[in-house]
Image (cartoon, rainbow, N blue to C red):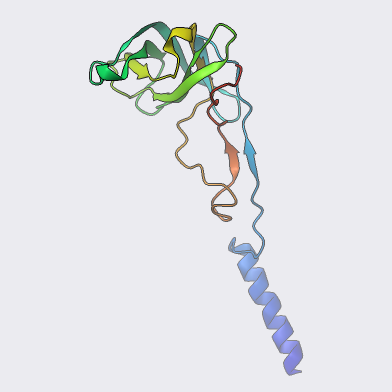
Length: 173
């Protein structure tokens, strides 16, 4: 009789834990969004590849020393414009300097709120061989997601679709 009560009680506890979301096995899955096609002008997409209502465009670039560290030599100074970025939407894109074969020479993430006026701004990108740069391209995937915890990091709150990793030097876009 005592064993039957213990088994019945354990079942009740398990049922309560399951209903409260405190199950023993978390169903955590990680995936990475597919990287979109790089271009000079892109429509920013979220991790589900839905348009975010914002476009980003490299409006020009030049090779010159950064004014604060001219001794480091030439960097890529590029102008960028975000259209449709508002207070509630603060997207970020990866900007990559590429050679004539679209091989990545260097990348950095650019946020729509970084040192910009209403919609435009400029950034410097350091690359090993600035003389080889043929273009500055933008990756359309929004990189602004702050919560990038994976299932490995946090089984309960991690997981989901994550933005693609920034292209590495030597990758072709």
